[in-house]
Length: 91
Image 1 (cartoon, one colour):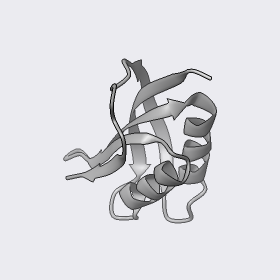
Image 2 (tube, helix red, strand yellow; image 1 turned 90 degrees about the vertical axis):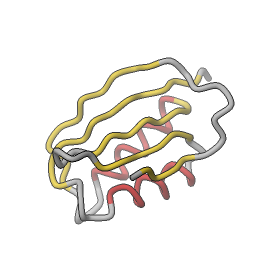
Image 3 (cartoon, helix red, strand yellow; image 1 turned 30 degrees about the vertical axis):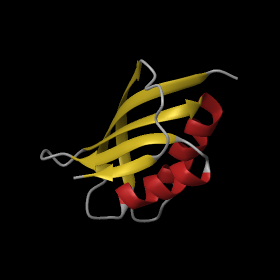
């Protein structure tokens, strides 16, 4: 199955609720790569790479956390990052 990479901006109650570390845990458990960071406007930006079905599992997991409240996501498919080996928390 082919890999994809997504750039996603999350809107809602997504800062100060463990979003980045939950994303990292889910990504690592699903063997996805990429990164996540808080933005100054209160959103969270995430780039994630892997199989589409596993990315969707990660998004479902984020949306079922009792502290996180995602109102909407802006999603864009972007080119793959060759050689990326892990998922990290930035900023």
